[in-house]
Amino acid sequence: MNDFEILKRAYEREHDSRDRRPPRYRSWEYYTLGASRSDIKRLLDEGLITVAIKTSAITKYRLSDKGRDLVWAFSMEREFAKIPAASVMDALELVVGFDDLKGAIALAVEARRRINFLLEGPPACAKSIMLEGVRSAVPGAYIAFGSRTSAAGLSEALFEHQPS
Image (tube, rainbow, N blue to C red):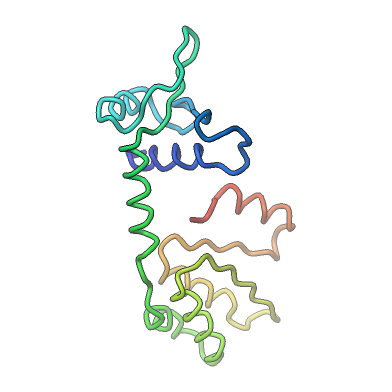
């Protein structure tokens, strides 16, 4: 795990909407992020994190302003990366027909928002191929197939994966 992944996980933990505590009281321990002690020491030395609470049994950390700004800047940079509709259409050219659906999917991806697609239809009508095309054109895309699992299983997979 690299430093940025650790900082990103820390940022997500500190900004978790399920945590009812005020943001200034949200801290974390190194192992909850999957980081090693040497990773944390390096981030402390670089000034990207600070010690929030230290006792004889426990040490909790928080992102410093410098670390928080770094994560925010990188996430904004990723968020504004635009995927042109033409690249999605190129990825979907394996599918014959369905031009209106392919165009709608390409324009939806180009809109740069979190998008969920539900493709329903009989077997062998290119649903999976369309999704694979979108996944090949969009970095970080995630596909969940519902025919093999329950709704609870799909929800669990999405919470575990946490698409960005």
